[in-house]
Image (cartoon, rainbow, N blue to C red; front, side):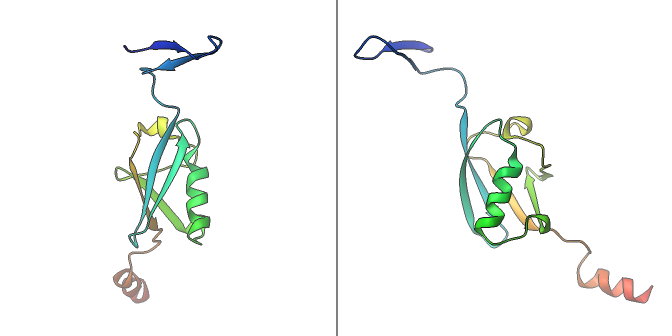
Amino acid sequence: MSGAVEMNSNNKRPREQHSSAPCPTMRLKVKGQDGVDVFFTIKRDTMLRKLLVTYCKKLNHEYKTMEFLYNGERILEGQSPDDLGMEDGDEIDATLHQIRGGVFGDILLRKL
């Protein structure tokens, strides 16, 4: 039965069972471009910046050199999983931020 309350053995503290409300925490995976997956458990209303900074520290990356994407869109520092409509088990892509277009971009810039 959805939303049922069950009493414990002391009949003092009610405990919810099968709540229809979403769980306050969720598990997210951050997948690096090197294929390394790091899993985090985070509250739905926590700013994702905290998770992303922790990811960088674990893998010895500088936060400002990284770019994080969810469903192809860049994650902004002030966003939470709820803001992005994330669900338990979703994946964030972590890539090294690229300033220029690579070798061909450098060649074009030298000719100018």
